[in-house]
Length: 278
Image (cartoon, rainbow, N blue to C red; front, top):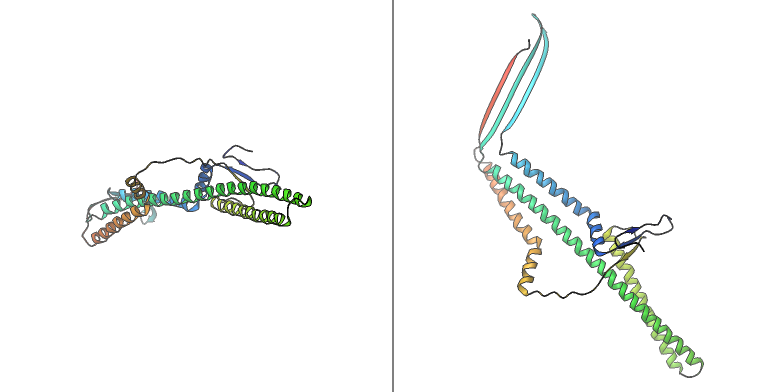
């Protein structure tokens, strides 16, 4: 087998692609292939660009223009040139610029929280699917061992019946027990197949590909008190923080709209120079 975390792909198209994954590999693959998560990262980049745009409103705007004109007149051919510089600086806007800047910063924080929530939800889904495969795989192995033992008992009972040592009832009980365990083993195998399909779906893997997971289910004892549990639960509830940010953003938007009704004071300066080129 290939080492953990390595994707082993056979060159022969008749062979299936086999993915050998640890839990870390599965989480990294899901994050890399998640379109909603990648989209949320782009939303963060856009929100950060809007911070720069809002920050520029604090500074003056300058525009430069330079024009050449050519033509003929009664005096002959002429060439004209014009230069113009415009400078504008907002001195008072009723708090609109400052609140817009604060709102842009909060939007970045909101986008980052959204990305964090999507990532946490995805990681939880991957862990759940990964450990479901592990548990169903262990259950399948146990059921196969039990089925093998039941088969041995059935063969013994069959042999004893042929030697007229046991009764027909003992033989029928052995057959019934074997069939019951066989059905349970088939159900365990079906559960494993469904769990693997669910994991492939989350990881965006081909349905016909093979998956081999590498895991260690050793339990670790964690000592934690109630207050610590509450604190950790509140910190992990991204939706609570998102709600607070949305309220702050709405309040800032209200202030921005009210500021538009107030007068704006700005300083404007213009310089022009026109003349005929030598």
